[in-house]
Image 1: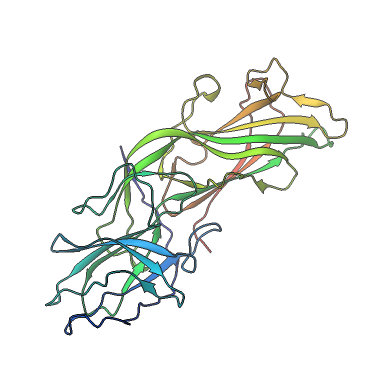
Image 2: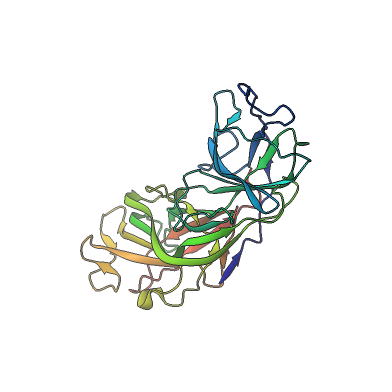
Length: 341
């Protein structure tokens, strides 16, 4: 199964800084040190930006052979970039292709190999904002290798508010105890694009071979909802591997497909009387005396996939379910941000 990141938001904050040549007394006299500068697109909050990126790794290839292997580059106090040992441009204007990613300590299921710059078996923990950048055909004519990083993952946020029944002006008290995203892939391999990821070039990488479907915990605690939508996230998990979202047909019976599972209980706010769930409800949880509600992430009415470099915001309005199945009639809106600013 191939998952193509077909959409990307092109919005870049340029803040170029260069490494300085300081103690290169042993450097070849007719060559120049390879220096870097970095930019990262504007993005929603809690992601890496041009000002917050501190390190990355890069691989350089000349004539399809490794020239720089797995070199870690770090930001220094004056905003420039440093790495050891110093590398120099090849003679005769030979072209160098650079493939870079951040963070430098990204988690993969299998290691990179010298002949392949791609990222094999990336393990998504939900908290890492993975960046990538490609520079094709650089040479000593370049005063600095200007790496324009892009976001490789999708950002996903869940906001909640209560629904007051139209035939009852009395608000309800919805207490959310747990939010979990179920049925999504947590591991996949990333292929770098074959062109430079310059600001003016919308080229993007590609995720392939998704595996390892796991639950992703979003919230665990207790939160009473109000009429204003609030984001619930106590785990810090908000980044997902771009993927097609498997359609959910009947999550209450087969737990199939990709969906959000919410553990909550609902009360009459004025009297404190419990309205849902009862012990006879299908999704009743004896341990908490609360019940599970379900929202399919793909039911042919919202979205069918998550794309790289995009932020998805789900606003879920919770009211008293109409039956005991827990399959609630959510009031759903999804904001698919078309610009990061």
